[in-house]
Length: 549
Image 1: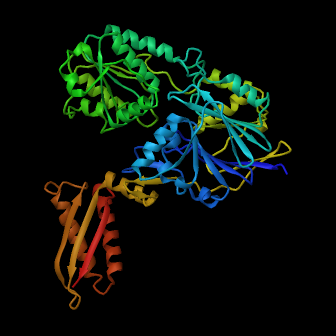
Image 2: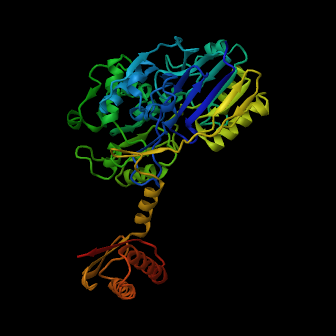
Image 3: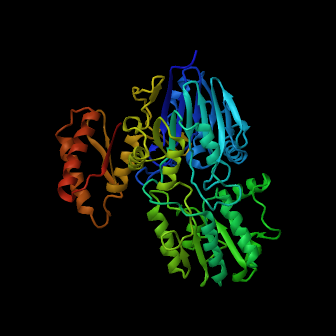
């Protein structure tokens, strides 16, 4: 009997850039589309990455038939190591995507079930089937998905763009998607990242022409950073280096790993003698060297960041160096990137970046490309995905302009399931708990909002520790009160503040000698807090320690 409903469960990626993960269920069968992470914003102090909450898929383990991966970017595959059932579920994706996944999971001691799929291949999972359509994106072997369900056909674009001048083998298969949709798919879920950008995205061949001009004009070394997954642009760098008599040296773990994977799979074939070690490149004249390094987002420990601070042991900026930052700025990273740029300028480099030179082509479709996708698929229902909240709003508006009825353009949020019904109606289900999980070192989920708040307070206001040793029989003070501050006041210059704090502690103690330890701590904490607020207008974390002997 055909399924009467299809339910979409968004676990991440809606209202944010990153953490893309959703479940699609017929009742009998469930599949997961992508399983990505998000890098923390500045206010998530100490957090390494942010991942979706997997409580609901764990509950539905018996119906979950597999994980479908659109492509190999971290915001689509990065959370896989923390998915509880990862070793028991088949993972479907392109050869390059799964090579990245295998390398990532191997670092965590995990052995996944990998099922490589080719372009246009169709796989069956329960009462659903998935067909894979190549798309143009800033990583090779990305796919859009054509999902066949008993209720109708769903198109999930993945991350895509429509590039009339794409590099060889990087076209978006519009004909295939159009044929699959049969002029009216049940649902279109489309990438919303660049919906605010009018017109069409830059072509990768335009970027190649710009890079060619830069290579022709550069007289010193060329130092180039880009996303470590952008294999097609790396291939162009190797080709340009060879054409201009330069040799490429690579530094950065992710860059080296991805290039090795791409070479092993036959996706990257640099000219012979095109690559040397850093040591070998050091012996060459500057005009013969290209350095391909990590650090496009200003990451503190990346190669480019260490070069900019003079902390890299082998690479120092030379007068006449040209630094090319051939990548977009991920939201939240602008401050870190501009700091790196400023430091490079101070060292004498010429720095080219997206705002001053056309050296990066986004992998995400602009407004007119999105319009073409909506018109071509002509969906009964439209749900924007992969974008911050305003992107989703603008994409819904665009879908209405393209003829999708307003009542069928649905703006979902993470955790709010959408059920499509057989009579072309829909309903929103009760929300799921999708509060994201913070990963800090080896701890997963042990850092929450309360811990982050405490870290923020410590960073903004500092810490005051008070220690007091009390005789348990007589009630007399045996030692203290000792006060130490960290990040609160400079003790040598503000000793009078801490002396007054000691006086307040003694006063509270003398007036509360019969009080239990916990109540005494509370009174000391409250009195010190009032004093610091009144005298300094500061609110440090106060930690009273009372020991009874």
